Length: 403
Image 1: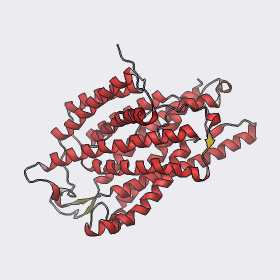
Image 2: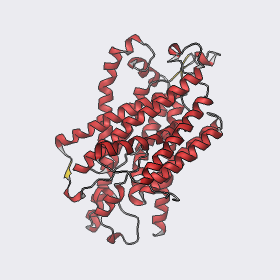
Image 3: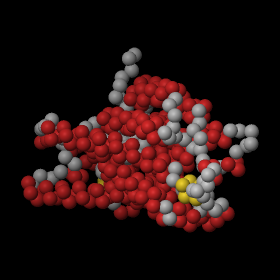
Image 4: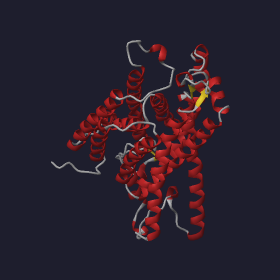
């Protein structure tokens, strides 16, 4: 590998790590923005930004930017073809000294790995030769609406869950997608889990359980008041909300795992580049949210002013608070770049590199949250995180079982 290739690999790694870390931290920062009664000396009476549906729309807008990125890559590819006559599919170039020896088919197989990261699209290994696959055009593109709907449900639930959990616990709990994706791949795709995968899933279950318990045992104080009326008087509100946050984030992984299974079904049948898949899901997801917002408002939001589905109220909170709409722009950009960096790392380096970086992202989110004073250190969480990481690394073949 040449020096320039090494530098580019480092650039991709740092880019994925930074943008992935910013995704969660910026969303949590947006949740902390005061949008009402901000001058009240009692923090519990202040209103914070609680609009998970608008945040989901924001995420889909970020994914839509991947189509723009794909267009720019296509322009660069065509420019390169005109200058040297070499065609390079999808706008990607492999980092290697012997570029001529690396076939496009091998690159497609390299990126088609089961790496259940949490934001960038995980392209799952299929059994078909990419040359024999049909291009996804016309009405067939509507198939991407199905995983987009799963993404919509999962992301919205996770956005609500993030209100009631710390950023690090939220990110760690998302690792539970390994459990459901492994189970669903057996039930619906006919996959057969190997022994190391079964053991790794058990480890992930143990790790996620410990992390979830750490959040419930030592809950961070919350100022969110949306669910206060539903909390029994005999129960500590912070404990109740911490438990609710854990349940919501874990429940969202069912939709995320379903999304992965549907994506594999589609990828087995059609030739679809990862960046275009992300862009299509973003487009269909954004359209779905925009249709759902007025329906949810008239069905629920009108009777619950200031709630999750109060569309005019949520819009006013965004446009009237520069910190909120500016953060929204940053989140959109970070999501778009994270998807690009994540897919590029898988293509240029390896799928295991992407899994490792994604785990480091969780660690960086945790360290940053501690430094900002958003959460306190917990040894229980450390134990859960170590077990979770070990199980995830085994599942993704980064590490091997010693027996």
